[in-house]
Image 1 (cartoon, rainbow, N blue to C red):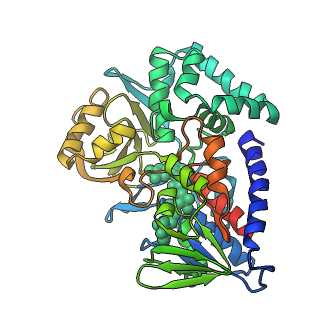
Image 2: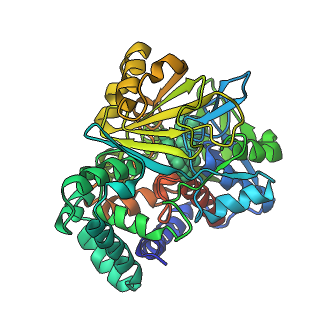
Length: 457
Ligand SMILES: Cc1cc2nc3c(=O)[nH]c(=O)nc-3n(C[C@H](O)[C@H](O)[C@H](O)COP(=O)(O)OP(=O)(O)OC[C@H]3O[C@@H](n4cnc5c(N)ncnc54)[C@H](O)[C@@H]3O)c2cc1C
């Protein structure tokens, strides 16, 4: 059990007290035939719905998008070739047990989606990371991770509170990481957090990396055949009559009951509410009574990572290896084969950029991006442009609901903001990836928090 988990237990105990007290205002018993309103049909909302469905508790999911899935967003880039890519969540992790067991229950096959990383660094091409990372640093890094894994819960807590005050970059530097090793850690780890590791809590990073088991490649292990959004469609097929799409929640009024007012005049009424919207969208809702000031502060303080996914479809898989990915110090940053296991002569590479780089790439023309991919891969593959057929770009930094891909807890924020965001508000529980103590930023985290919220009802 990680210290992040234990920490939540403590927070939940505190929060639980508040919930019982506040939900009992004018409401001394929980009605037998209660109804739960859920805001959002992403993985957290659908997971909450699934739990209530199994327990035969009435519920209604209100979703502003025209389809279920939220930030799990599969896109058919080539209808004729049936090539499907992910513009949102990409990898299912080996250790994501809830997600994997749901795939199993719904007969959704998981395909291997692990990669063998190549590198372009200072205009030189390396066929593996081992060719460039120094053995000394590899050894030190392994020791840091295994040392943390061996700590008991109390030791992890004490260390965690210290490490939360510094960033991951500083932690690495303090432990002797320098030169090419430091440059590569910045390039690789920043793709996990979606911003420079100079902005990421050292505790969040260390705890996350230490959690991955030996069989996992940093939780970049599988993908759902046919696209990750298939899981959302499976949930929908069970209870489509409970999901109201194209309906945006504007106001929540909580008294004896919860009244959820939507654009277009629709009002849903329930006894409890589970809100799974990302924090930017939570703030846009008119809460009556208002959200506690501590939560409002936490919403303002929490940032979401800027990620841009630029998919390039080529008429040939010139990278040869189906498990191809490449970390570069060029504008394209990280490239990976996005159509692994999908039969076709054609194939897609996604350029995955983060932070300022993502914001720059997002604002350019297709022509600029085509030149960028050519330049970025030049040292390994000259003239890729002659094979380029099509491209699609999606920038999460401007997504109107989240203004980012997923939450990024910065220095000093985990222990400060997490309990504030996780506290219930009268009849409302909050859920979503940003509130997962185990798998924050992952599909697993969204599913886990949705399930937990449903069990609190
Ligand atoms: C680029 C990118 C890469 C990622 N990579 C991975 C990965 O490799 N592996 C992994 O496990 N995870 C990954 N993730 C993270 C994963 O997608 C999320 O953790 C997860 O999908 C979040 O689910 P959620 O239910 O918490 O939120 P969401 O999916 O955002 O669901 C919230 C829902 O609420 C709806 N909503 C919001 N406001 C309102 C309103 N006012 N009224 C009605 N509806 C509303 C939204 O439309 C949305 O559907 C990635 C995400 C992105 C964006």
